[in-house]
Length: 170
Image (cartoon, rainbow, N blue to C red; front, side, top):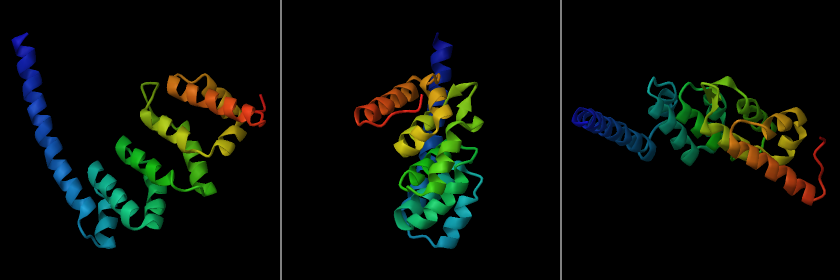
């Protein structure tokens, strides 16, 4: 029992230091004055938190550029970078962005060991309801999704639209 506590304690201290290091770098990159060239380089960084910070910086200062880069980062290997990209794209109602979000809803990268990752909930809630409801096969699939939150959202969306007089095809 004592060994387990000691190991957890050692790991916890190490992870706290690691988190402090990257949060300091994150804060400097997001809040500091940066040239677009620096931000472009950050978007290509091997560190996930640098890519995410660059996207946050662009979102705060250059939303059009942020949207442009979010379209590419939606496929980033790092979950938190993808989540940030979804956050940026959720501000856009452009058809291209909505279609990319639809594709990501069922993309294998947004599952881990056949389990839905939180990003899918974020995606489904940021797709325009009318566009989502037109995807009959997808809606039927999502009604029985393994992720209970997604099921609830879809059933609620269908119910709201029925109450408004809009009917789901199935």
